Length: 607
Figure 1: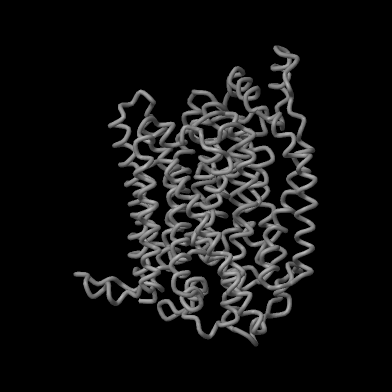
Figure 2: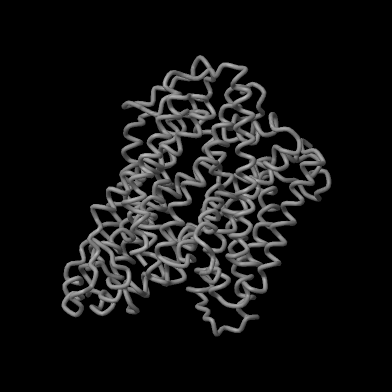
């Protein structure tokens, strides 16, 4: 066993701490549905921002991004646009404000504020619940896979296998580890609700920050004594038509990894990412933990601050760790154990580098931090899934008896955990699951959720048929296009779902005028709302029409530039590249100074 007694003690203290947080908040969480699912909307924006950042600091994503940095160098800063990471900029500029103004509990409940209570709204409500649960289960399974791969390097299987009354096939060993730590995350999340999750996340973020700084220091000391041997172009974030990274003379197997990822024609890949990313971001948050944190804020302006704060606290810390482990992996590649099932698995670079280079004590802290990252993501997503089951399927109210509400909360959480773990058993690797979530599943989500914000005529029938015509192909295409990167059939999904949206809308009656006017006056969106705007102004000539489209677009452009510089800065810092550090820092400071006046100072007018 790699772990020393001091490491085990640190991990045990951490596990006791997060379980205690669940017990502390248990009584308050049981007092009402709002307390359990949204923390009573009393938590400050900076705590929710730290919690959201901690939830995004997931172990599977971090393993994936260490691999990306190892293989692609500075060019790896673009690949997370697959999520896309810049959706946080759209949220901070205007979408978090619009969403929070609706004052609902879940995305499904929001549908009623937009489409009313007719048949179209009812169908939309059903399909958004289905999508929310599928996406939450997908994210839970994705995290579950990464955790299992991670832990199997630190706790050898042989001693455990000796006491089990059954034999576990080698490919399922990671899943056993995943199940064990999933149970701990499930315990405090189900017990204490959102407040328990947020307080645990703040603790976890503190641990991750200390760990990230320590890893960066270890990597920088090692780099000061060795030369980093990488292909031409690895140190530059810029690229041409093709990737042109040739590892043949250094680590030939990496070329196979590049071909497997499908990123060789990088300019085409980048344009597809950008095109999809803008549409996904403009469609608003998916019905997961990010949306629940926005709905949990005290006000629309605090929702915007929370979303902006996520990038500021997440990216520098996360990329210090990512760059540190990538550098250690490159410097000492021959020492790393990357073999899984007889094949080299580059997703093992993070745990292998930890096992090889992190000293006892710090290893326990880092391991606790990465376990915390998994638990944070898992718990936040679990809470979102529970919200849809309790609020929208079971349809509980604040008058539901507390004992009954408690039982429903617990049962729904247990059911989601069982299903997601079962799903995780059938997924081969992190990258495959990630590609399906961000390109396939979200590809079918975009059209309906884009049009709902910006086109007044779009109705519940259009939303339902757009989601169905996108979701069904998203589930089927991976079985047909087995050797195709999911991103590349995204345009087909978008076209099919857009046709479903428009046909469903134009072949059915428009939403009731009173519902549209209520939505428009509450949310105050910009877009194609002229007939509704005219009707509202006729009744109230003093209504403050939203004229911020140009300002919002400018802020989004600057925000994306600033966010990208924040991402590159810690990588340049670990690599000790002064020119890259100063250029990135200058961009961040200039963008920050401008957006202080064009965005932050105007937030007080948004409530």
